[in-house]
Image (cartoon, rainbow, N blue to C red; front, side, top):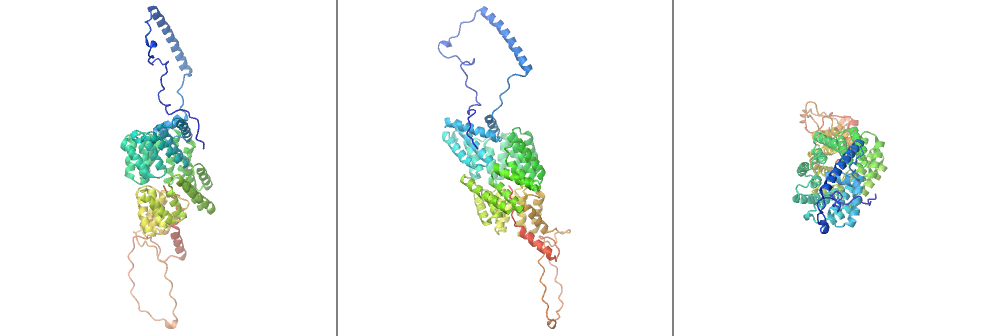
Amino acid sequence: MAMDVMPQQGPDSGRTPEPSPQDPYVLPAEGATAVPPPPPTLRTTLRRAAFGALAAGVLLAGALVAVDDGEGERPKEPGPVERAEAATTAGSPASLSDLTALIGDRQMWVESHPKDAPSLATLGAAYVEWARRSADTAYYARAEQALKRSLDARPGERGNGEAWVGLAALANARHDFLAAKRWGETVRKQQPEAWSVYPVLIDAYTGLGDQKAATAATEKFGELRKGVPALARTAELYRGQGWREDALATAREAADRATRPAEKAEALHRLGELAWERGEPEEAVAQFDAALRTDAGSHDSLAGRARALAALDRTDEALGAYRSALEKLPRPQYALELGELYESLGLDGDARTQYATLREMVAAAKKDGVDESLVLARFEADHGDPEAAVELLRAQWRGQHRSAAVADALGWALHRAGKSEEGLEYAERAVGTGVRNASYAYHLGVIQRKLADYGPARRSLEQAVRTNPAFSPLAAPLAQEALDALGEPAMDGPGDMQPPPPPAPEPEEEPEAEKKPEPKKPEAPAPAPSRTAPATSPSPSASKEKKREEAEAGSAAPATTGT
């Protein structure tokens, strides 16, 4: 997309214009013109007073006519650059068209003003936002160059904290949360009351899995920046802690109070995500549709809509929505979801095409400095090489990327690689954060079942299907099968909850002549009931045994990832 457009205004457009020599409030120039004129005569004074009264009457009448006719001058409507700057100043997203205008405006300005540090910082931050919302990772390199030029023109220590904030936002976009934390904390130490640093700190702490620090940063941001941006951040905080009712109430308030289209669409998208996570796909579709009607540039709502349509078995519409989302916002995560939807429909060739596309996207992003290890590891764990997934995720963990998403993915990858005992620790950590994610609960339940911890396994699998019964076109049916295979607990208590052993083989008949009477043995006491396995019939039929074995084999099948 072409970004180089003619500038609409310079960075000083919002400042008070320099006074002109004709301005009556400007002091006269020095020299002969500075000599005051002689005082007017009495006759002149009276004539001027009469003329002034007449002129005042004419002006008053004209003003009344103008008001009555409604033809008075109205305030000038802000242009796209002004709208983008206003949104940025408020901490809200700008529409993509306004963001495009702002980038073009600043590009032209810095060509003739290469040492304008604030304009370079604005340009760099705008590049980051454009790349994030278009998935065009090539713009991250442009952002880095603009931000470094800004710091060369004016170092951060000399008041250019916005360039440091831009570098923190760039690091977050590249999933380098540790670098984002360092940049953000540097600004906070120098300017603790600068509200613009707290959103990047919230993202960095969340990516690192530091819930305490993320909570503190969110609260501070709410103190410094009231309104929709603070409500949006608070809703995300509640969502990550599993406080569904609080998250929903706060997200609704943000949507009600939002006025700018991009801001409104973002709030509606959040409501769609919350509805999807609650297992309400019809409500999710409605919210995503509302977001798209509000702002056609809300491309992430296309993917959310596709996810919800698949849950409603409107697969043709879901496939179309996914393809549209990938065309406008080519993110690896969407390629993975579309591939798994194809696979669930038996379209293995189309699924392989999407998985190949995912690998290409990850490789291209890596060249631009973007780390997509998490989504690649999720793909490898379910559809590729689980050992490779483990190595990718161990590197993330060593780099202090310890969010719930990384913990869940690492636990699942370890299980898929045959290391379920080690994977259990990470899967429990992911669910223990409080986040209500059906995929996390499913992964934990399967690992617990593999380790013969049947009671907790049943609870985890029940939580998965209760939270969102259609959380994945591939994994959701397997979660229900695994839960059914565990059976129901006994009505009077845990009982014998172990799956029954296979029936013993029938002893071979001895020849009649060789048979000897055996002494009668006392019956052995019944074994003590186990507290960890499902209650089932002591001697199931062969068909039930085969179904149990198939369900156990299927429980390790792939699952669509959670966030």
